[in-house]
Amino acid sequence: MTEYQQGNSLWSDARRRLMKNRAAVASLVFLSLMVLACFVLPLFPCIANPNATDLGNIAAGCSWQHLFGTDQLGRDLLARVLYGGRISLLVGVVATVVSFAIGLAYGLVSGYAGGRVDAFMMRAVDVLFALPFIVLVIVFSLSIEEPSKELTAWVVETTGWSRESVAPILGLTPLFVAIGALGWLTLARIVRTQTMEIKAQEYVLAARSLGLGHARILFRHIAPNLLGTVVVYTTLAVPGIMLTESTLSFIGLGVRAPNSSWGTLIKEGADRMEVSPELLLFPALFFCLTLLALNFLGDGLRDAIDPKSAKD
Amino acid sequence: MTRMLLKRFGQGILVIVVLQTITFFLVRQLPGNPFLGERKLPQHIMDQLNNLYGLDQSAWVQYLNYWKGIILHGDFGPSLIREGVQVSDIIAQAFPVSLWLGVLGMLIAVLAGIPAGMLAAYWRNRWPDALIMLLAMAGICIPAFVIAPVLGITLGMHIPGLSVAGWDDALCAVLPALTLGLVNAAYIARLTRGGMAEVLSADFIRTARAKGAGAARILFVHALRSGLLPAVSYLGPAFAALITGSFVVESCFQVPGMGLHFVNATTDRDYFLIQGLVLCYGVLIVAANLAVDIALVALNPRLRSNP
Image (cartoon, each protein chain N blue to C red):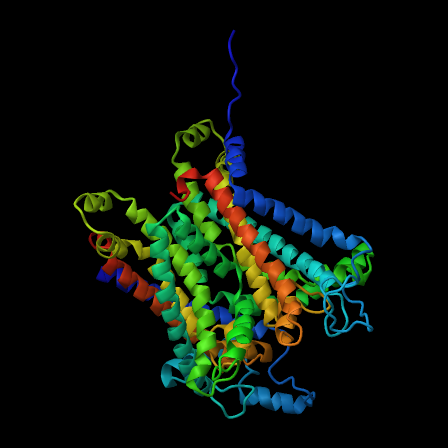
């Protein structure tokens, strides 16, 4: 009797290696819990309204009624941290998706085209790399504020949704676009190098000699083989982007009231640190642990998908 | 080698010009203008102000005038917010502060980061490595704006003489420099470990070990030179960013450096000041990258034969 053994695909191999990495698995569990806590938990009535003021308990410490205490306006800190996490995670993910799309497309085209087109596109990346990132993000996000207000008005008009429900999310558009539009440079470089490597392989030549068009070769034959690297890099980019968002919010140029993100909460906490340290402690703890988990998960994914680059 | 440097220099000039152009047109795109104060100015006064600073001309004329001023007269224009103050005066005042802070911070970062990275690489995959890398990861994940207030409340409040805000005496630099140093030390430690670990598993290190070289000799004489390459590439741009001021650290400790001006100039729409600061940043980052290129060639002889 013949024994059949199930073949191992790249992805099942990668999953097996990832599951062996305790730090990465713990990070994955932690991140899932964090996402649940920020997006699902506030739907239940046990979490207070983050903007409601409890005038009987102003700047109170931790208690059963307010687990994390309240701020100087009597707002429940737990609710504020969870709602702030929503914004921080949202900006992190959406801006990453924006920069992922731009970087992937740019790198693919540059690497596949080669020659002068490639040289020109890469010099443009070099120039953008030398620009002061934070300054550009600030200026860029301020200058697209007007169009984003028009976008909000347009959405309200065409969909008939209430202004209050769409404005908080759409108000973040300048931030999504600015951080995403300037954060794709490293990814574009990585994708370009990989595309050039893959382009030189025989199966691409075979595809071309079969008469396939450029678009089909790029997206059916080259892009899927880049996926591993791109996924790894994108995971590692999320913490950086979240850090940019919170830095902007901290200096007052990112997320604005009535929204708050972990960055603005940390700012408020830092201002009142001597009186009530927990206002700084809880947002900072949530923020740092999330970044830590994202980094460990990214490292774990890198080791799992691309064992060659793993630490020796 | 000289050709490569010349080419890099030319590219650097190009970067600065493009940077100035982008900034110039972007800041004028911003909603609002520099003269929006507490009270709304009457239109005719607004017109006079615009005329005085040449802001009523077309963007291209303004753009050419700006370059003409810089190239012919070394004039960066006036501040639009602080009357009678030149942009060059503001930079001349703020730059030494940020420079001093940046040098101190970098010193702390290098002195802490490189030895830590070397130790981690030497004992790789054992507990000192795990401990150092965990600390470095924490340093990367705890942002400067959390470290700053925490340092302020722990060290600043309890050590007499240390001040948590302002810029009056020498001790004021301690906490901001420490914050800058810790954040950068984490990156440097990780890069040094990566670079050293790779070198330490190379064949020539095994040969050196087989010939009886001690740990110190292997680390410092054989491995350090090429093991430092990744950290050196990081140091250049990081140093340029540090000496042009860190927004966060300077605003946390109320240090009157370049970073604080960057943020204020942008929110105030002080066009000429933004451009002057960005120009300053661009020149420094290009210079830093050039310095890194030279340092890399000095550290890695292989780059010399193959320009």
